[in-house]
Image (cartoon, rainbow, N blue to C red; front, side, top):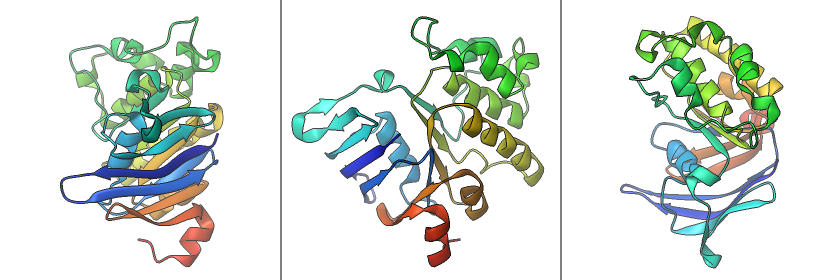
Length: 228
């Protein structure tokens, strides 16, 4: 599904985010160092950060067109978002977290049904537990499952492997690959890790100080760029 961000401009406290890219890959990596504007770009796609000007479309659906004063609210964008802090509700059970924001059977994509999502991510045995009793890797899978249960057309992942050790990184990475291969959803994957990018993504957008410095197929961009 094509993702278009045309002349998107966002004024932040310390710099300006300016993005003009187009990709039709299943998984696009947003790559760059801390402070480059990667999370801010996800917030723009999710509709939770004000945009001064620009145009955003996912497939044939226009989410933002400032010239026409068109803005689709966050809750109507059909976007699943897994932030770095996961944003799980600690006072609720895993089941209650999963059901929060889930589509009803009449509007949900059948591929994103509760049983299928929990089976793919192997969290059936966690359903009755409290979030506070889960390990870091379990919380990550629950947050991912909650995002999928919203039947998203676009899935935003903000550095899902950044705060885990190597052993857990390999395990969660395997689940992310399963999600990529199992569900028909376009993914935008924020990372600053070269190996993650090669593993997960087809296209890459490189950000530095709020500006796009390179964009295109992952292997082509990484081969000609000194990215670390």
